[in-house]
Image (cartoon, rainbow, N blue to C red; front, side):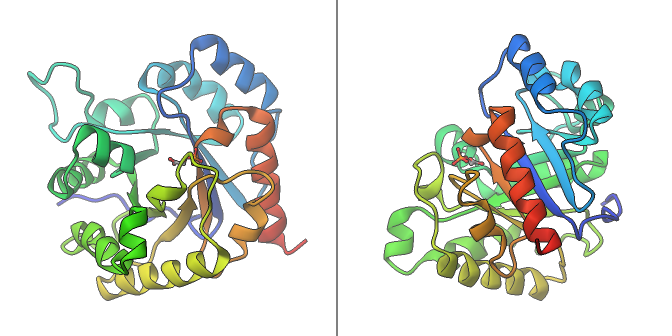
Length: 257
Ligand code: PGA
């Protein structure tokens, strides 16, 4: 399996915006204007995952602002008769660095299995993309003490992957996504410790983000939790103002200000 080398600056926090199925061209231009000239501070990496239709138009303006481009999904085949699908090489071709895989909305709404996520990981690595592998438990699973078992199962797709594979993991409790609920600092700390230990057991040492109702006013409290190295931000990334505030809050934590 050909895999791209580990991203050199992975030690920095990553703030990644996931626009989901939102945004027209006009929104993209307004967002880019409002983002300002220098949205990414030295110690925080910034990335944006707009819908497929906005990837190409936003690629160059984002590159000029030092914001990395990512896609929200990919198909695992290289090319061919797969109507409606987009390959990893196509994403790489237009300048994507990241691709989100295993998001709970794809698992729960589209029916993506762990096997499919596994195939997509390989496709992403073969094309030189860095996957952001999303994992997370449902509320019922947390309430019944199954959180770690669910996360371990979702992480098992990494079992055979090279330790050098370029990778980011995002812990997103499903009950916190788009609900306004966030995991408590204790839950985040405990869960990230478990995720890091599972990754280490499989020989991986990668950045682990938190996601789920991250907003400007809760970013700092989440980013100071041990083992949290950034955020995957949905709703609050749609407006440049709140996205910028989240980036600044993460930067303050990263520099200890
Ligand atoms: P949210 O989404 O910030 O709107 O909760 C997060 C995500 O789904 O990545």
